[in-house]
Image (cartoon, rainbow, N blue to C red):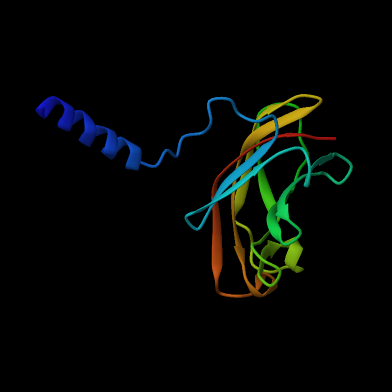
Length: 158
């Protein structure tokens, strides 16, 4: 009887634990991040953009959960086709129709993003990497800061 009670208690404990691990099979396109402790999770083939613009030069990435919820950033340099770390010079995050946070160029010289994007893989079709940045309310001039951390992405780009 004790054996069954111990097994039952162990199952209850394990069932109550939250599994924060990534899925066994990662989706082909994803953007994940931690936004002030809340998870931002985009998976899919629609409502995102990833562009490498060597003539500007910059790399841009954006992912949107709805018309009013998403994140985007631009770097100060383009992809080189190898692993590299790029400074993020502008970023934005919106969590509703009425709340948008931004920094850098998106806010016409608001507070800096203090962010970086590290490219871990890039070929002619797919780019993967990590990112982090800060954004602020009031078009980048406010005092309420959101920290976007632990960002990871795998996207198709042009």
